[in-house]
Image (cartoon, rainbow, N blue to C red; front, side, top):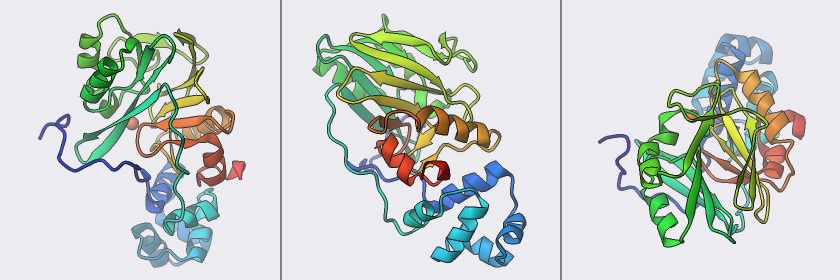
Length: 287
Ligand SMILES: [Fe+2]
């Protein structure tokens, strides 16, 4: 099967969290470049207890709290993930925002359309694995695609850019000036763009990739930030080579936005800044 072919499994209406507690611990450990032995020494746990926690065979609250402390994670949020106790609250439908989730191999990826509900001027954010549903939606709703924004250059997010751009040849394609293998119109942090009545501010959220961008959009019923893989509900994109850069960009540029801001991530469910301030284990500073 090619990576852009869809597979038959149905995408759930409420997307599950992209990461579990073991993913979170693994990302933090790799980012901080700590070995399991380092963690045993820092926590006072035995090496076999640490190994078991990373394999998910031990998930006692005490052990996880000790590991969370050593990994600079927020312990209660990590424990809540291990107990499957947290999922972002269901969000109201926002006129002018549509999420598209497609299969890319055995994982799902999200792309988004945002539009001015008065003029139907629209912008897409990434394409996902397959942009057919987005193309159909644009046509069915009489939208006019003006701009295509790419969050980062991982293939699952822009796999169908060629087709989306071919079907909408007047739409301008934008991506990071730092990491721009496709020669898109280059953007840097602080750039501002307009689509109909929507204003879009570019935020530099490098770390997961060197040129990762997020897009803060105002003009709908609540502010929206499209973040690619910089941040997920209760997690963040892997950044083994630039972990603190990724974490601090998220903390300073995304989690500092108004708390009602809707976060549209590249994988997993949508969430809000307020929810992530309260529940994302990677950011003990906001608790
Ligand atoms: Fe990515």
